[in-house]
Length: 394
Image 1 (cartoon, rainbow, N blue to C red):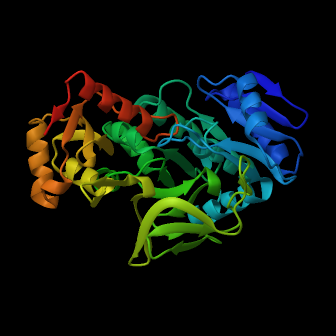
Image 2 (image 1 turned 90 degrees about the vertical axis):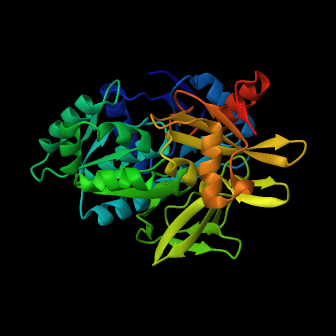
């Protein structure tokens, strides 16, 4: 563990190890009790001294209530925001999750503890007076099964919860023993990126209480579960489909900008269906091609429905003729038939104007530690493939 600090801000490198998580539990306990110093957890390749300098250079507003700084992933732009959270906001988030789950749980940690989803796993356990069982090393079926079995023994009620990203869940439920262990959990929270309907159907058919979470660092993590706002959360969907959120777990503000007021206007687009919030994508997921506005999530849905890919990401690539063209970075499945066949499959459902004009094959999508697709890196991969003529192009 490495540490760098100023008079009030303390940057600490926290990895997914039992020792680091034990330290983090103690530090979060003091934070929730009102300690005045500000914790900035970091991980991966980040160096605490460099992060301290970044925070000092960018922060223009740091209210007394802020005791935790979380930086957003910047999966689209490559530049994350600096989010200030208070103990009151984190406690409200934890209490809302506890109510949804029907009481406290022992938590299994398989996510990076310096990102909000993993950090909240630890914070919820601290607030509930429960343990965290940390999966050290690779998160695979055997390690997850063992961690769940350990967690079941930590408290007489045997209530266990785990938070995963879709990529993890996909691999874990392929193993029957791990799937059975996950099915014993009170909840398997799935967030970080939208899971496919196929994945959710598989998980639920295996008996898992798979709960899709929607939220962000700015809301202390998930604040809408399976489309239903948690206790105290208010959602508004504007005429332009932009989603806004209010509630006791909404951040104090962007420390590199200022307060946001009671309503956080997100970058997400959504709609209501049967009383549940459906997220349709992000504002920057709209591809402007030849005067048409094309929804990248809608195209992605049809790319996945073709069954020719294991996973994919769809983005807009600048083009001199069309302004932007639809491009897909895909992980081929055994049913892969090539870029033209994929374009034809999407065109059959959405029309030629919406079908990918650029298709690039890859063995795995570039991912951030938070579980989101690294769209900046994906764009670079597609651009490089166009440059070296390895992309399929129409």
